[in-house]
Image (tube, rainbow, N blue to C red):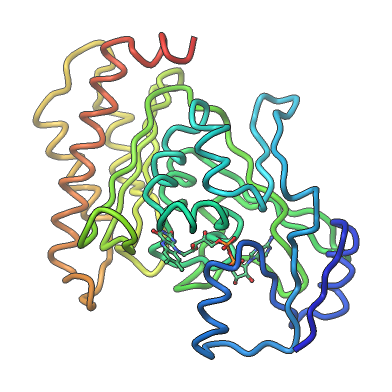
Length: 291
Ligand SMILES: Cc1cc2nc3c(=O)[nH]c(=O)nc-3n(C[C@H](O)[C@H](O)[C@H](O)COP(=O)(O)OP(=O)(O)OC[C@H]3O[C@@H](n4cnc5c(N)ncnc54)[C@H](O)[C@@H]3O)c2cc1C
């Protein structure tokens, strides 16, 4: 197996163009498991760890954050937890401190597992994935269009993930995950919510309850029409939101849980996360924290 070690982003793109079968490796927390268990035996590994362009994040002129594919969960929590609270909350549930010190959102996107914990908050927060190839340049792919199937994404063979773009939270954001224990666990299912009070809109993301991570579109549309932003949360609205969120899932029975349980849990998590976010919004706590 060849081991390619580009030092710059340009070199990495050239290497991927010349060897499209080369498999990128960042933190290696997915890749090394696959290599150790002989799930994959690629002809070449493309190590991205020396590429400095992937390791940083910054604020763009339009106010959005551009977070390099090589930024670890630990750094995301420490450096961006105030601006991307939903994603940081999800990141805190990933693996263990060791995994969070190596693993990245870029790698989570690369693996595109329906159970990846970063996906629901990326969907709820309208993230956009920046990918690039030497031949065709940059493509900006909304997270909602990125996931195509079980562990399949819109990434082409000659492309690499450069970064994801996301606006700093404009309102409360929450993530909830059901697992068989509290840490080191793959989600049985998960749910993320992001309030966008300026637009009177709520974003959602469902994890591990369909072939791909996905938004609960009908539930979002229902809240856009029915949520009274000046009032207390109507229990009937809350209940209907949970039902519509569960209806957006298309789970399967597997070793981690049944389809019926997953649907039930999505409804519960949708109601809970909306209640947490609403209480924070109504208390004014989010504005005080952000300001
Ligand atoms: C013990 C353990 C616990 C875990 N717990 C969780 C958990 O709780 N939640 C969760 O979501 N995940 C979990 N994982 C899985 C893994 O940690 C995450 O998916 C992590 O985000 C992978 O990031 P990485 O940088 O290590 O990726 P890598 O292993 O380096 O790569 C993962 C995939 O992405 C591709 N890739 C990486 N970078 C790029 C790039 N720039 N462009 C294109 N493709 C790229 C690789 O080719 C590979 O297919 C766990 C893994 C282990 C071993």
